Each structure stands twice: as structure tokens, then as C-alpha cells.
Image 1: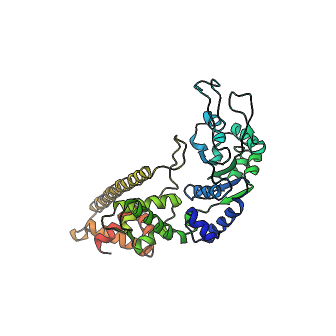
Image 2: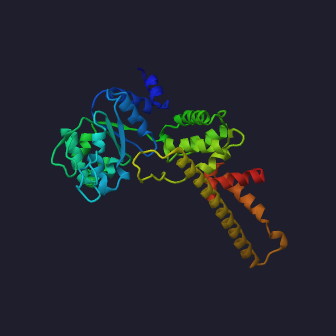
Image 3: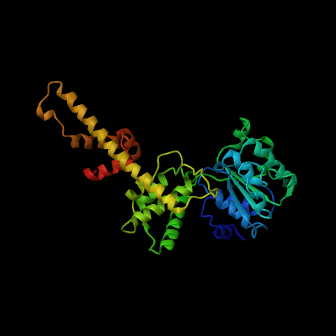
Length: 368
């Protein structure tokens, strides 16, 4: 199987050298039982590579069990992983299998492994080395045949340095490390990913494929995508859902973009990793409403600022012709900001203390 065939089979959409190199490594190590550590920011596609590692391996016809270690309360994580016997603690009404036993013969994916408590790390290391463990409340050993894949969006070496992660477990897990770059470091992938998500959305909803304008593409190429591929997917789907013309324009994208460092992670049970598409759509629409509210506040602050300036002028001696209408002042301020920043609208918006979306609306309003 070639790299291109592998990518197509497992839905790895990319033309960047960095991803092609990772795919090559994935194909080499997938057939072995060696542990693999996947590192990268939230939303870069660690789950996609995990699925490829499992399905391309000799365990591909067995279970892939995914567990978000950061989403399980510390007090019950050990029970979730290793299981327990009836009556071993308050609330243990029946015997229960843990994820290791459920994944026996297959693959266990431990996401956000940096959030695992040190006491549980000790037991995980023992399972990795001996392939056996004891359920809570049990006096017998349970043997399992499980391949471990782990992922983290924190630098585990730094976690080791501050004593929050065991050094021996770190070296045991990092036999092979796949460092998946953020989307902002592989800009050439943004366009083909956007087109791919458009096709998926259109097929799922039985509609014609929406069209993205060149200005909208340009905006997406400039944006830093703190939520990475997951954020891009939700922006495309939400813009498609809200479009009445079947055309996704520059102004359709702006309200859906976040200026935050990253997206909040869902740390509630159930444990399965991905939010539903419906929940993510609601999240994006909610963020768009917040942006609209922010724009209104920006305009209110701008009007208040201009009013104060006019009052300051009135305290001195001046003629009627010295009074400048507020819309002229606003227009001049925008022109000056654009000239100063050499037409960089994002920088101009910061200078004017308004959002970029408000600036674009004002540019259209004044015909600039």
C-alpha cells in the first residue's frame, strides 16, 4: 500500500510533507505491538492517526477502546481502567470489567494521559511491562493482551521535570512518538481540508456542494486556527448551514472565528472522546452570538468616546464649522488606521479598538 492509498483509506487529508512523513512512520510501526505516543494540540487529528494505527495493525479486527483520562474523575479512574469486584468499595454493586479487559486482544487508546494521577501511572506501567493487573478488591491476577496508544497535548518531558508524570512511564510510552503539527504550521492543508468538509456536509445533508469565495479562502489562510482541524470543520459546517445562497463568503466566516487561544475541552462523562456534530454546531453558533454582542459593545464604546471628545472641544473657544460630524470622524479614523497599517485590517481593527468584523462592515458602509 502506498502512502497515498493509506491516507485515502483512513481519511488523512493532507498534502504537507510533515503529514506524509508521519504517515510513513505510522505504516512502519502499525504492524508491531510497540507503544506509540501521539503529541499535538487539541484538534490536530490524533484520533485519526490512532484509528489508522489500530486498523492497519494485525489487531484491526479487534476492538479499539478510547478513553479520555482527563474526563474521568481521579477517584474512579483506576476502577474504569482495571475494573473492580462487587463490594470492593461503596457503590460497587456488581463485578465490573475495566477498559483493559474490554480491549483484550485489541488496542487501548489513552488520551490526555498527562492528566493521569501518579498512583494510576504506577499500575499502568506494571501492565505495560507484565501484561497483567489486579482488579480493585480482587486477590487474583488478570492477564491481558493489549496494545497501548497514548496521546497528550502537554509536553510530557516538562511534566516529568515538575514531578507530575513518572519518568519511567514516559520513556516506556515514547518508544515511537508522532508529533502532529498544528494546522497553522501547514497552511497548504487548509484549502483541501475545507473542500473535503464541504463535500462531507453536502453529502450528509443531500445538498449541492457550497462554494467558497477567494476572499473567504484568503481569510482562512491568514487565520491561526487555535482549534486546529476540529475548528475548521465546524466553521465550514456552520457557514454551510447558515448560507442562504450556497456561497460562503468572507463575511460568512468572520463571525465564526475565535480569537481565543484554544477551544474548551468537554471534560464530562461519558468518556468517549468526540463531541457530537450537533453539540459542536451549537457551540459555534453560540460563539457567533457572542461576537455580535461584542460588536454592539464596541460601537457603544466608540460613540461614547466621540461624545467625550466633542465635549472637550466645547469647553474651549471654537466656531460651528470646527465641529466635525461623528460619521466623518469615524470615517477619517478608519482611513488613517488603514493607511498606517498598510491596509492590514486586523491591525487596523486593533488600533481602532473595534472587532475586525465591525471594521469590515464600516468599510462597506463608507465605501472605502
